[in-house]
Image (cartoon, rainbow, N blue to C red; front, side, top):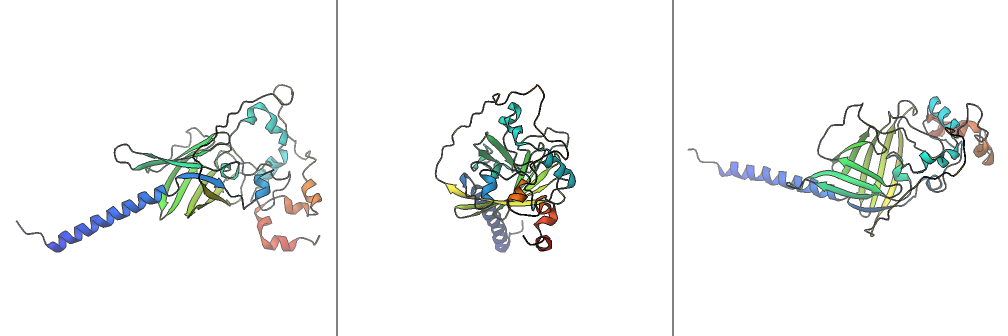
Amino acid sequence: MKRISRFAVSGALTVVTALAVAATASAQSQQTLVGNWAPIMHEDQTERGAGPDVGDWAGLPITEAGRLRAEAWDAALLTVPEHQCKPHPSIYGYRGIGGPRIGRIEDPNTFAVVALTMHIPWMEQRRTIWMDGREHPPEFAPHTWQGFSTGKWEGDVLVVDTTHLKAGWVRRNGVVTTDQVTMREYFFRHGDIMTHTYVISDPAYLSEPLIKTNGFRLAGNDNLAPYPCQAVIEVDRAKGEIPHHLPGQNPYLTEYANRHKLPVVATRGGAETALPEFARSMPAA
């Protein structure tokens, strides 16, 4: 039997050690997001509090079809019992009330991280991000508010892809998405601060991807209050009546522009309204 070179043994040990270090580093990275996170709301604070004005779609890359849907929206829709207890979809939930509690699910034998869990208390938004390499289901699988999410680590950044979402919304004034919407997310942590960047794509209602970011700060509290919701009759309506506006009949679309002395065209949305060239093309107030 040939004697094994000590260099070969040393090389093998080096490889094994490197793999072990890489695995440990990966496992540590997967744990860095676990905890309770409180929203900082440094961005779009008005939108995330009282909510945006009707007709304020400036800077949003909506298509003409998306604009028509937004024009038909009526805030009274939220008084309809079937709409009162809806959770935010995952494409909007992180901009809503409260921040996520992030946990993990481990394999009981290997302790490998199978999934990360995210729970936002408002309307009990519960989400699972699968980390075990599984494929997304076929397109005819059920669509849900949180969708089907898979994640992977790229260095110390968690990258998440989500499909199978219900028709939802990206702004609380009528800017909606279809069930063809998809989302890619990036979660970065710097000390006690987490930045969440997300990219939303919808071939029907968005002409190009919509990119937003949210900031969170690690919170010390361990308890999350329950959020029970019971639908009630707030407004008496005829059976089947749903608040909406027919095309061309929404009387509130120009109120925001008029109040702030803005050109109406600047508030109507479209990818071009986010560009400096568009702002320079507008007449002076």
